Length: 447
Ligand SMILES: NC(=O)c1ccc[n+]([C@@H]2O[C@H](COP(=O)([O-])OP(=O)(O)OC[C@H]3O[C@@H](n4cnc5c(N)ncnc54)[C@H](O)[C@@H]3O)[C@@H](O)[C@H]2O)c1
Image 1 (cartoon, rainbow, N blue to C red):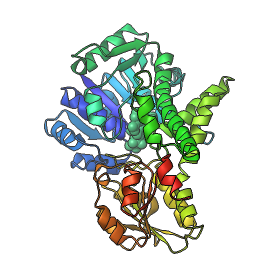
Image 2: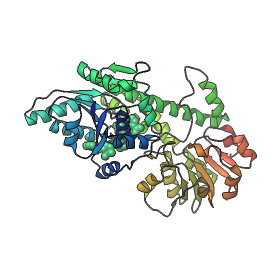
Image 3: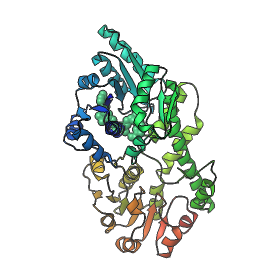
Image 4: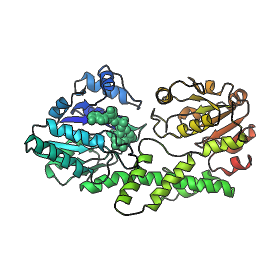
């Protein structure tokens, strides 16, 4: 099928590459000329396992093309995906200006029937707004062309985005237009062979499904963080508690890891956006607001440990930091816990010596060159001459480090672990002071 994707970011590029790999002809449109120029030369703007090979293959075989020419994009696809960003507005609600700008572009250039697909995460009612925008522009043009607006939320996880797109758990299609449904089923047929994963529903329910999914996951994390904070105060070990509750199949082991807060481009903004949506219809979403509040507090936690350990005197101290990305296997630093920690350390006069396997360019892009941030190219280098080690991301290479070397490199053998990677008793036996999240042992030895 002929498909156009507007917005070639984490979602749009992955979706486009996976669709092209399945045989569809995909035209990718973005307003960022550098991104498009790079992609035309085979430069992939983000890190995502498996993505580069798919993009290069699709380009080589002529099923994936990149352009800034919106008219060309609109002309190409019978299916028009909107996959642009929906960042938080000033009050936390989702800012729809990019989505509506694409709707307007499609309406300006369309010459026949189009199925317009909202792939971006958008509040309930957005399909109606997109539809109204298209109708208004067509009226202005004096045209009456057929179109349908479909909600098709994306559930991929950064870090596993390609495989999630190739093997989706479910394909949610929100539409009451039978022709559009048929086209969507045909588009996704290559990914729907093992058993039927397509769930068709009305547009508003599809829009809400995406928020409900992310808010449920964020709730699990904040719940665990709250119990972890209690475990610290009560002298219990959250790791034992995690196993104890995860064994109940109604709870399960997924997504109940405590830590230094969730980040990324989705959970924080989607929880906030659903809070605003609820308030707009006169409902006070007490649970969702708390999910957000607990997460905000959790992101301060590592700094509080560090500040307490150094008795409030961080001036001139150097903290080695492992992990900058908001989670492993991505270079995305949007809302990352590492940013909250680094900014608090800098405000207190400390320096940061950091390593991340993928997110160092992104760190430079965000913070530029500064005297209190040194980015180094190995995890060992980050330790050299530092006063303590802090960990913000659970990258695989951080899980079994050479503890003797850590001890020898740091001026004090102290680790602040925001992802609970190590065993407190083992670290204590090796002479470390070890702070982790909700692990009674690690906390009590430091009190
Ligand atoms: N990142 C994720 O893991 C993820 C997962 C599921 C859903 N989503 C949702 O998908 C949407 C996109 O997220 P993302 O992380 O891919 O965003 P992103 O910021 O990585 O990419 C958005 C792209 O859209 C482009 N753009 C903006 N206006 C445009 C226009 N008028 N025409 C063409 N391109 C335009 C930008 O230049 C940018 O390249 C958001 O609504 C997000 O909530 C994201």
